[in-house]
Length: 453
Ligand code: F3S
Image (cartoon, rainbow, N blue to C red; front, side, top):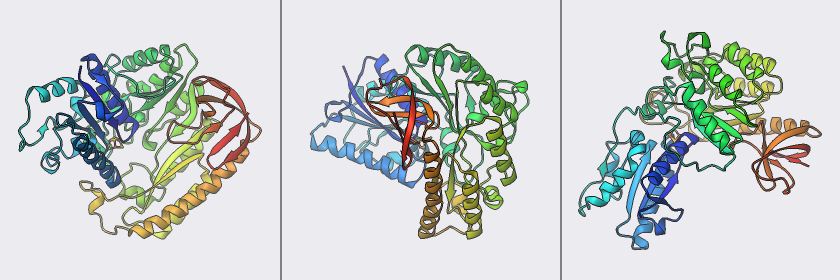
């Protein structure tokens, strides 16, 4: 029996791809092992979002190659999968001859026969790696796609769509993952039903743009600004209502929504569906109109400000998570002042800030006015310090409240306002059983975490 070890890098979308590969390896009778030393094959599922993720991916590849040399695992095969393999399909086989094969996003379901082929056709010492990557990926999983979950039993990521049609000038992901393609409502609901029966208590809906779900199937083509509207065809609101109607005690969490597609129908749907967590992840990237225009975010400062007000009014108690990019080409001190003022007045419950990364192949990389690293750093610290003060105040305001939390590990839980691996934690007595909901009373706060009994 062939043994395979897999390292999954990058985001939750890549993790689902890893789960699909593991599902297919199991189906083919291969064993997936945690330790590379005992493996016949090592797969590295890479990320290529920004420079640091590329460096991390290359570091893992070289380390896996070094490890097989040190341990004299001369027959071990090294496969590179995922976003970096897809993005640099032409260049990587020449640049990384240590690798045995590169596979892309359309080869997730054929990983097992690819491995068998590598063992059937021994490679000569000077041969270049085999390259299976195909351009313009089109794959999207279905409810019955073999998959082995790598998350704890009580939570799952559900990829409701793949690809992205937005033209953001800083982002390489649409070029890697292709055009937006949605699953059907029935497919997602069938998968959710299985997951809930399997003990899942939290369904995290993910894609590049969850708000665009279904819109690519409409008769009348939507624009990158079209609002969610179930009268025109399948839509996120249809999906949320069907998931909310499934029996069982679970949360539905919405990640990666785009402000341009939010509608009153979506706000009303969240308010009317008690199983949808009072939490929304909506990357905004900036608030200055000048920056939003050069970023090609398909939205404006006025739209965002109005939308935040409508969401807060329509879903009382909702926690808003967002991300901003600082140091984008041409950003001025006045743009940062405006962003800081917006952060101060909006008081986001959760907020992340990225320093702009100049990525080859994106339009923003060629823009004039690139910002020096030290200025990016200073701006990053300025916004983060502001948010730290907001988070401390918001944490203290929770003291005395009773929250429903999902216990993750002994002594550590998450509330509705905390997405897995991204947000804070609620520290609870370790007697609470793992994987179940528990009511707790907040007794204190520490940085981004809450303490509870
Ligand atoms: Fe995710 Fe990195 Fe790919 S963030 S979509 S794994 S480029």
